Length: 216
Image (cartoon, rainbow, N blue to C red; front, side, top):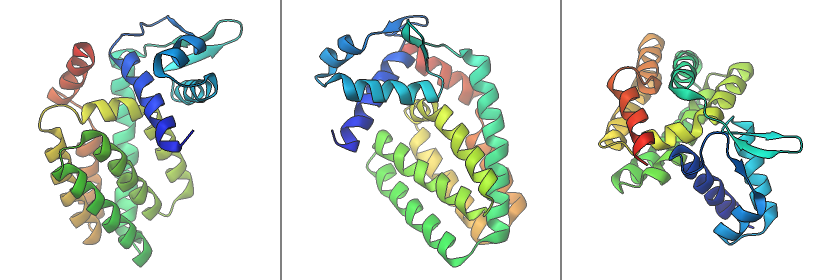
């Protein structure tokens, strides 16, 4: 099974969980999922292991995969911490930027521009993921990079859903442009501020995310 198909399967199960088609506390049967998506049980098992790693489900002895609902408050707390970590990564990237990091940020930013122009929120999500990873790497702090990547994985389904909110795609890319300018200018304080705002989901952005989850 190709990587793209495996990713598609994981995303489809994510969507069903976030839309409450699979309710909190529900057991996900591998055979039922395999039949539903027309695949064998092996990729289903791999997808469930990935979802267990980010806390959307919990694989329990003798019970199998159980859907977990972290609740809005927990999601908010994770985004709050993510915003601080990303802000620090941006600040360090601005201070420590080298040629290779600059080229990586430029390349991933360019891919984001193309997917944003196409209006493809799913493609933009994956390009956006690479863009943020390039900033983590540019911080040249292995520990910070590990922590950012770990929490980014936990928030992956919510960040992907967030990009489907009306006008968020174009707004996100505009924010990227300002972030790149600040990092390339060596302005660590501005890079930190912009990334904290970009990642944070206070106020209307949080209510939009919660509403989009309920509406799916």
